[in-house]
Image 1 (cartoon, rainbow, N blue to C red):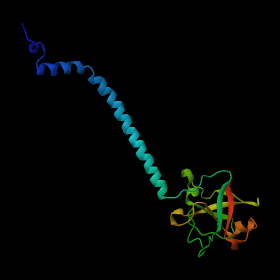
Image 2 (image 1 turned 60 degrees about the vertical axis):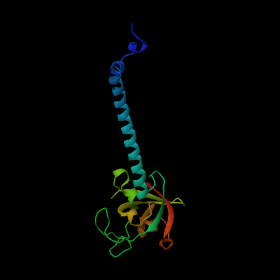
Image 3 (image 1 turned 90 degrees about the vertical axis):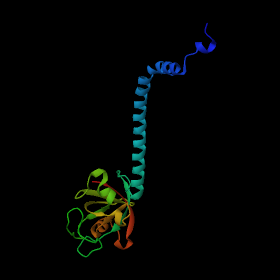
Image 4 (image 1 turned 180 degrees about the vertical axis):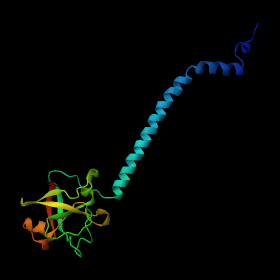
Length: 177
């Protein structure tokens, strides 16, 4: 007759029995852990990308989105050699006459969504409702101190709108023409 201790499996047998019980579960658990770890990795990756975008956006300013009536501040700029523009136009590498209806746009607006507005026409409208079409020939570089909502315009644009260039800054709206 066996005693109570002889009925219990030996320690090495218990371990083997436990392994046999869970052996069929291991492939299923491994299969579940792979999608979970891939999903966790994807979530971590997306979180890091979002953080990078926030940090990048904070590091550089962005111009407001362009709409049919994009709010801006129009300033006076000289596009001629020796003028207040500081150099040749970014779009074509030339100086321009201040008698032309031309503008420089803030960096974000010039290159919005990868589409350069160089040599394209925009419509500028004053609060009083007067408007003029002008050609984009330059960039008002936001990384060098230009605000991100500037339409830097020639004296001809100001004149066409009936504005005094001595005012220096006026609120306007603009859109692609």
